[in-house]
Image 1 (tube, helix red, strand yellow):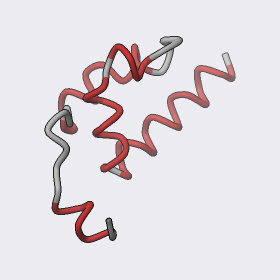
Image 2 (cartoon, one colour):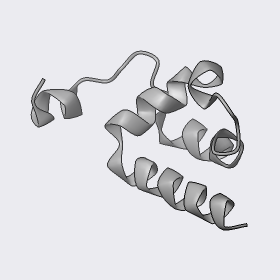
Image 3 (cartoon, helix red, strand yellow):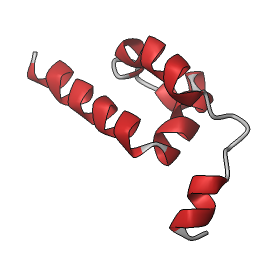
Amino acid sequence: MNELERFLTTDPQDSLCGQTMEILHVFVEETDPAALHPGVVAHLESCPPCAEDCEGLRAAVRDD
């Protein structure tokens, strides 16, 4: 799938930005977040800004 197709196609499990941001702080600290929050994983795969926020939060958690 090319970038345009990926951009135009939304995974039905996608939790979208709002829901993702609501639980991101919990998501980054869980041992198996993909099993518990597949919608967040689907969203992070298709939304570079949210994925960047997630990585930043993971880095901050690791530094503590």
